[in-house]
Each structure stands twice: as C-alpha cells, then as structure tokens.
Image (cartoon, rainbow, N blue to C red; front, side, top):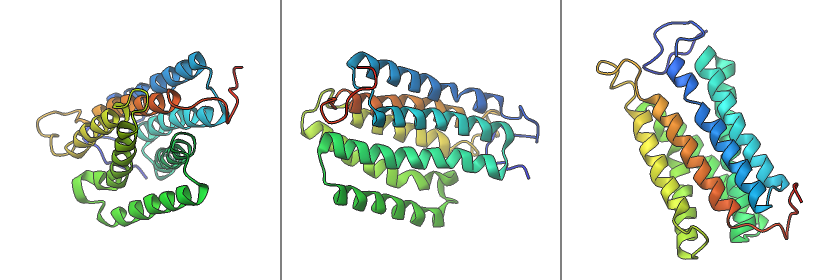
Length: 217
C-alpha cells in the first residue's frame, strides 16, 4: 500500500516525488565530504567509517521511501536515522567527551525513551515532534563543544541551528501545498545533509587516532 505523507506526492508512480527523491543527493555529498576530510586528517577509523556508512544509508533509505512509498521502504528510511543518532552519540561521547560506557548507555536510553514518547504525539507539526529529542541532544553536545573550546567550537551549535531550520521546512510541507505544489520537504533533505556534515566535521576535527588507528594509515 502506498504511503502518502508529503505535498509533492499526488499519485502512486515511481517518480511521484522526483524533487524529494533527487534531493537526497545531499546525504551522498555529505558522506563523501566526511570521508574526504577524515582521510585528509588521517582519522578514518572503524567508528568514523561506520558513521559515514550510516550517513550514506540514510540517503539510500530516504531515496527508496520517496520513490516507492511503502511500509517496507518507510522502515528503510527510519532505521538508518535512528542508528546514526545512537552511533554518533556513543562515538562523540566516548572519543571526545571521554564519558564512561555506562553513562553513554543511560544517555542513549534517555534518547530512545524520549523518541518513543514523542511518537504518541506524531500528529503534531507533520510528525516533526518526533525529532525534538534529537534537537535536545544536539544542543547539549553543542554547548559542550563550545564551552570546552574544541576545534571549530561553534560547529555543533551551527548544526543545531541548521537542523532547527530544516525541521521548520519539514513541518510546513503539507500546509504550503495550496501555494507551492512541490512542497518544502526537499529542503529538509538538503539542509539535513549540511547538518550531518557539520556533525561529522566536529567529530573528525576533535578525535585523534591514538585510541583507534586510522584505516588509511
């Protein structure tokens, strides 16, 4: 059964959401840019490679969902996003903040529990309410990154701002249908690609390969 969630989709065809589908190129460009930066900094470790792989998986999953719009492809859209959030929180907390594993596990449990709660109100803001816990985590990491004067200390705060703007475009997609046929969901994709690159850059610039040797050494 076709899932119709966005303004651009007006039928069941494979290319019923061409702009939304093609705008996922942002994730692939972000993944390539993150790989290139990690390679240049010689910190392309297993964990960085994992995050880049998940970033690319977000692009693949989202592309499939907007092309086919089925229950299966919706899962392929959601799962990589959730895995990236968990993995990034774990890796940044471990390699940059140096938190103990138990503390990180508790943070991840808090994140997932909060997301589950927001799903009870998924009708709010076109479903964007489910991303509120992610904004909270980003803001916390951003304040830490800034307060501890890390390299590019404002990067995560900038990423948070970009994500907030992207969330705004996602939220108003259906409301703007009468005025703009293609909607604004494609801007959610484009800005999220930027946001994810900023997050990857903040991590790459602030982790050494002393704990985990780089793959390209």
